[in-house]
Amino acid sequence: MPDPKLQPIMDEIKAVLVKHDISAMIVLGSDTHVLHVEHFDTKTCLMKVNERGLLRFLLEKSDYPDAAALSRAVEHTAAVIAGFMDSSRDRADDLERMLRIIGQYFVVRHFTIREALPPNPPPPNTPAN
Image (tube, rainbow, N blue to C red; front, side, top):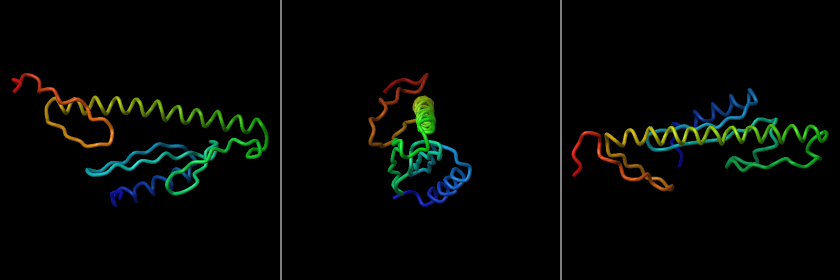
């Protein structure tokens, strides 16, 4: 169950994205939950099918007025997805570095379904036990 504080904020953000017809990748976090959404603008060839975020690719020629429009939609979609991927990798690397810095000074325990980070090294200038 999502954090009740995060959902109304995410709903407001989604409304702004729809209003301005822009793609975005949003992650909100509280001390107990993380809520994320990928929103695609109407120029992409992706269409949200349901509230769970299921996407449908619109790649049929019949979905567009002509082949050029389909080509533009595919190129735009690929650019948005590639941008999201590049940004995600950069953010993941930055966040991991930040967590490792904190881990040099404090014991950091976080449980996730993904593989945990290696154990924290002892803080600098302290004897190892």
